[in-house]
Length: 281
Ligand SMILES: [Fe+2]
Figure 1 (cartoon, rainbow, N blue to C red):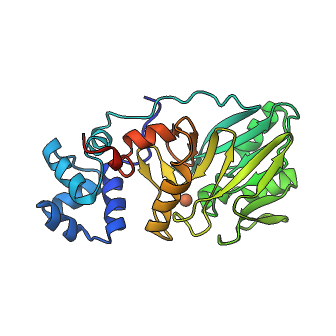
Figure 2 (figure 1 turned 180 degrees about the vertical axis):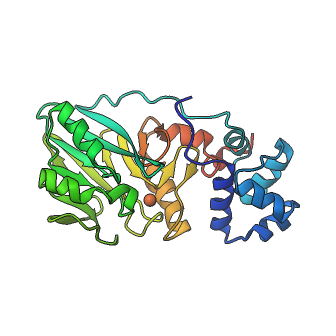
């Protein structure tokens, strides 16, 4: 086990209802449960037994064993192996208030050139870490504009005076004096590295992921054992995950904005939303 998951049963139920456009009453009717029990599950107050979880998974088109494992907390992705590419990735566990968020430093080993991927809301921790590592980030790459990912932009901009990138469909976060707009498939150079931009919208309309070698900084598109909240479009988010992320090789590391790191293979085997194609056993 490598850290508790971002999402629990209640989140997975709510997000899968969202995908079907169902209310709690719709789910109650389809599953034969009471609205009150659905509501208790979504408030993290109740985990039913396996037979009920199986029924819920079936009506919501979720993978039965994966939903049971997430509901009971018996699965977490295996700790990932470091990417053997010519770079170092530092994961920073930060907080916005009490809410945990992950930001990353990507460092080209040959040139010591570095970038910040997402700023968190307390960028002082990023600045402190960069000082410890004796690096001065020269690029800021944003997966999306939510405050827990872009709220630290102003202080990082003041400290490093460097450009920041974001998709044009996102609201423009304040604080950058040199904000650049991304194109799908473009590459951003960092020292000897080339970072590939993958558009993965759906959590927000301009959500993007950044791929370097066998690692993807995936923002809030997919979480270990779940998916992001579909603030702009559920089907777009589902397609981003199934067509852009889970089509990458199984060993590809997924480094999300919340919860533990995982791999494409782990999610294809254990994510209730995406392991359905493997059959319900
Ligand atoms: Fe977000």
